[in-house]
Length: 287
Image (cartoon, rainbow, N blue to C red; front, side, top):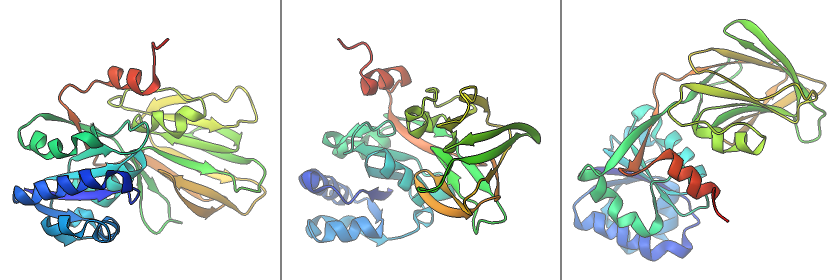
C-alpha cells in the first residue's frame, strides 16, 4: 500500500515512536511518500528508519497514495490537506499537539493507524472546503477552517461589504470578518464568539471580529450560497488569512467565496462521535 506522510518538525519527544512506526511500515512492505521538510528533519535524527521512504515530494497530490498520515496537531492537519490538494486521499491525523479536533489517535497509537485502515476499522468523513476566487489572486486557494479578512496590525478598523447570492448582506465595520466551515467552527471562529457547528452540517459561519456595532452578530448561512467580500478602509492594504496562512491584498479587492467542488476525507476510529469529542476536548460536564 502507498502511504503519504506529512508532519510537524517539532517531534523530538516522540522520536522513538516515529522510529517504530516507520520501521513497521518498512517491515510490512509499504511504499512511503514523505514531504521534504519532514524527511530532512528525520534524516538528521533517525536516518535508519527512513528505508521505507521511496519518494520525497513537495506535491502530495501527485503521490497517488491510498492514505495519508498527518503527524502533529490541527495546524499540521490543515497543511497536510493543502499538501494532498484535490487528490482526495483520506487523511488520518496522529496528535502530538494540543486539542487535536481533527486527529484520529494520539501518538501512542501511531503504529496501529495503518493496520486499522487496512482492516476497515476507520470511518471516513468528508469535510467541505471554501474556494476563494478573485482576479487579484494568482491561484484559487481553498480553506478547510476559515477565510478571514483582517486589518493590518497598525491600522484602524476596516469595513467589509458582504453580499449573499448577489444581495447586500451588511457593511461590517470590524477588526476582521471570518467565514468559517463547520470544521473551522472550533478554531478562530470559537475564539471570537461564533457557534460550534456539527462538521456534517452544510453551512458556513460569518463571524465579525471586534465589530463596531453590537448588532453585528455571528450568522449561519447555507454553504451552497455565494458570498462576496470587499474590504475598505483608510489603509491601502488588508490581510487575507486562509487557514492561518496570511497574505497582503489591496483594499477594495473583491473576493468571491463558494463551496469547493471536492472535500477533505478525514479518517476517524469507528467509534468516533462528535458529541464525545467535544465533551472530552472542552471538558464539558467536569466538576
